[in-house]
Image 1 (cartoon, rainbow, N blue to C red):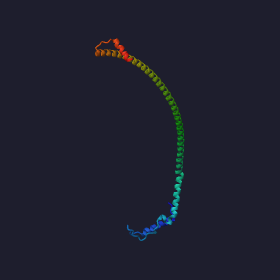
Image 2 (spheres, rainbow, N blue to C red):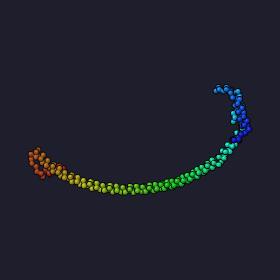
Image 3 (spheres, rainbow, N blue to C red):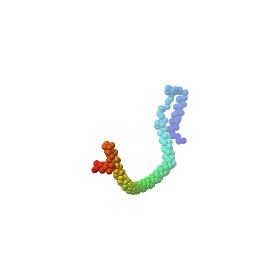
Image 4 (cartoon, one colour):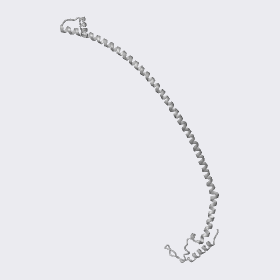
Length: 200
């Protein structure tokens, strides 16, 4: 260990102070000893500055050597590795972005094609359904017209028959009424001619 003259002098002074202070009493209340020394904190004592400067230079040199030979190369390699990894990650991200853009463009194209195809299919289905509906409506209208004409013919027949039966019933009722009122038996021919004249 390197010892300066100032350090040796201070060590001697400290030994002498310890010897003179032997037997002196001190308490927690701070009763002063007979000899207190210079009263300067050793790191701030100017007599210790040369040794402190030498140890500072030795410590600084040691740490500089450690940083320059061991820590700095490791940090440089770590930074270089991280930079290369970041560059690779950025390249991969750009590649994946371009692939995603291409996939999105392809998806949009397929979507537009599917929309056009679905619109064409919908239009075709709509036209087909409309044609089928028109044909069904025409068939139903024809059936309805035939049923209406048949019903009208049937109603005409029923009406004619009913009117014929009404005339017969009227003739019979008129003959009975005349017979009951007058007591005279009227022939069917007279009753029929009378009813016909009344209707005309």
